[in-house]
Image (cartoon, rainbow, N blue to C red):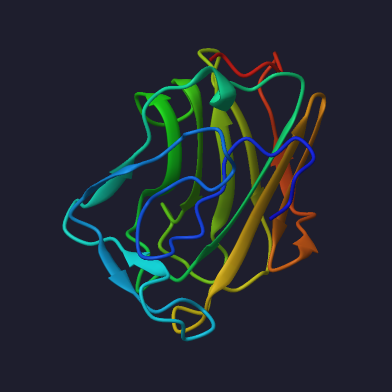
Length: 174
């Protein structure tokens, strides 16, 4: 288990428990346990038909000066809209409190989709679109490094260098 500064880690070992020691345990609303990227049974979740996992609000999940979020995802398809993968807070799009990670496929033109970190009430977004492809049959890693004013988005370990946009203020509103 990584340790330095870790506030939550959900390895999905058959459940939605946080193994970081911070008690950020989840509640499952319809997601189904499946095999992970290594083929290990009951170590990933399949989200379908509006299913989700909810983590109660916790001060440990509020962003301070910086944060890094890394997750593995395998998408069957991307709808021709913003596909939110992880969200803290309320609302949608960039005009929200908290933050979200997602893939924006509004143009419907895979593989050139947009990787997005959206946050705050001031229409702040770090959005990058480049030639990275999304292979729907494979697991993909999405990592966000947020340390204002620097924001980086990595896709499958590759720093994304496409169009980068951000609002006028950098702070995430918790």
